[in-house]
Length: 160
Image (cartoon, rainbow, N blue to C red):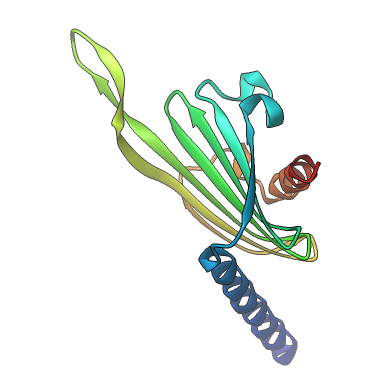
């Protein structure tokens, strides 16, 4: 029994290492053609009050990376989706929150003071989550199965 679980763990470590290598290669390449969609082209109006954008990074006609940027009244959420041969292999989610200033005479969001409050990493193989690293506050949008669905939807939109 120990041999089987040790073997499975070693296999997972190998997949994670391979995924990290592919992600690093995608991030260091600068010869991409990009396609950017605005808020109205990829999301419903009620999903954001600060706008958004969706950018696809293409190499030789193949979509390699999707960058989702969503502005909210209290912060910014970004999710980077990394693809290998059309399959989601890694997603990196980050949320920055604006500092809220509450004084007796006024209250407001300080847009210059941003703090990272969530940083999540999701590793996938054949459409299944194999590992996740969660850091910071969480909400229902941090679901790995939803990330797969959004990635498929965004891939189709960007490839039109």
